[in-house]
Image 1: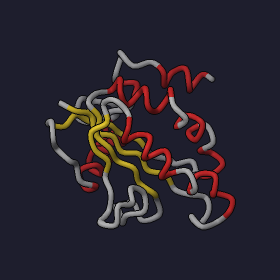
Image 2: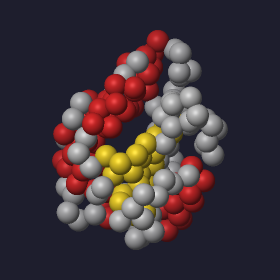
Image 3: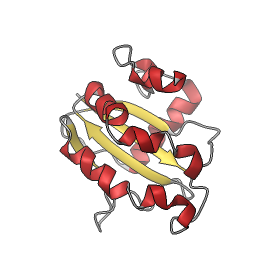
Image 4: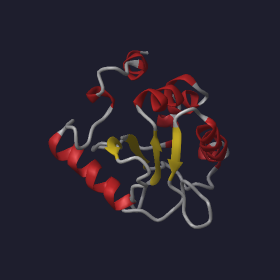
Length: 152
């Protein structure tokens, strides 16, 4: 099994607004870095090759979805690379969401999830909390870097 993840965010500004440029001018760099990481399998992209700007079930949100060999590899990318610097600035660029914005779930090796599948998992997490069907970092007892981030 491999680990799929979905992360959505509602920008506070239009994507061409200078106030969000610190994010938009670096997204390709961060996504490219993800593609070089051990354990990276796949990232959702539209037909033009963009990983962020595709139409989605969340009309006001930007979307990132990827598949990893496991949770440890995703955890390392999120919390031990330059990605963490951008995560730490998310409140500058994105609105606080009332529902979950991040979900993970296990997929068969080689499966490329759809955005509709991801929406179902995110909705399930909102409705039922952490389960084996849809979960966040707290459901994975062997990964702990997210806790240090929350406390820091």
